[in-house]
Length: 386
Image (cartoon, rainbow, N blue to C red):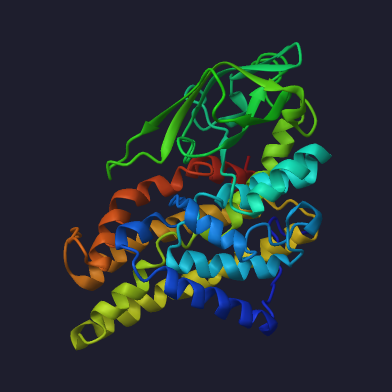
């Protein structure tokens, strides 16, 4: 009997160490003036200038063909680069979604025209993408979405709403999932299609959703007859559910699903380094946290190997995201225990700013990319429990 989940080990070769040191050296200089507040945003932080520099160094679209602006490097090389970026809390948001999932989707299923136009823009850090999936009336049941694309002369008209769309107010393009077939009640997982949408289109409105920090990187996007040309359909009409599901394996298994709070750990270690009374507590808390981090990393690397081999490990990715979200949500509380003080934001104190930001933000980590309830449903199905 085959096990319900597959996590074959994957080892990063020593030959990647020069790349790791190159990225680490770049970040040491780039991050010298970053506040704790900026570091806390990590991969959702939107900084176009930073993305342009990352693109100039060849660290966006690393695995793509050179013909489309890529650099034909391995997935393992990209993984090393991403790890270092997340460990430093780098502001990757202006290119993150394009590099992680929109670009690979276009590369895999886009037309030649779409590849030639969009992929070089992403690889240079010049085009920012957001993902239009969740809807206000669908809860966590993505397949019940009702936003509709209606065929018209020369293209489609989009109507409906998307919600929890990260950085939609700042991005240039969205890849959105819309219903092009019958009603959701009749064919829930059928008749869905994906479209490339210009965020400057007439009839499109973006409203930020403010969080506890007073910021609004989540958004609600309303489509009121937004026109999309025929050549902006991605992949095959009616196959959007399978296409979007394949994307989610990339989204749910990457290091961002367990490293969003990681930059807080080194700062906390520095803060208690000279406190002898904290040694025992630090050994227990930091040792346990790093052990858990190693396990999550091994699981994530295993999924990378499966994706590289052409597989779609959806249930394994769901497990990594569920465990990873719990882990990164627990880090601020671990640090609070280590420091033996209530979180508070002290201006110009990197540790205080970062801890204060994360305490207010970590509840959202189990929402983005699929709620915990949906993930556990996928895991239960993989175990044969439903």
